[in-house]
Length: 227
Image (cartoon, rainbow, N blue to C red; front, top):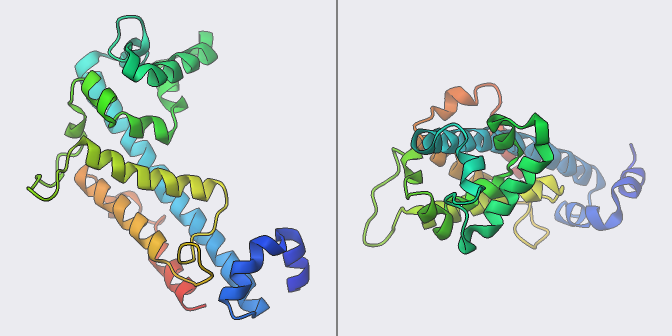
């Protein structure tokens, strides 16, 4: 396909950074765009695996403490999310219970919750309301030091980074540039990828085995850097 056709489909506004970063070389710009799509696909796969592992670990932790229907019960009257500070969390749960209706099962309810919901279980109100046990899912988390507290707030902030990247991927935003500049750079993608691997390790999950055959992040980043 010729560049003008490609640009007409994707829009000149979307292609501007690609074209500019490739010194107005149309062939390189199309190559970069396609590589960015591939990197987005690769990262979304990694994020999806992490999200499933995270929610399952959280579910296992709270099932141990509160039983097999802990999520539905937490939002019910008298449940640990039935308070003013956790009202939005309770509303999200109850809304999805209603949507499931007669098809409700605990595992279907778990599957309805998005990444942001699981992240917010590490926020101060939710973390304390649920009994402060959630850091148990990271048995290999580093010990806190006077300079860094590896507590629920730290985990919440790290998960926020992944959540924001996930949203960028979902909205087809480029991840092959230096922030807000038409300069090719894969630092953002590599940093977030390494963060996910680190959190897998904190969970004592062998990320290399889990992602075998799925993980091509570094080779794709290298290809982008060499465009």
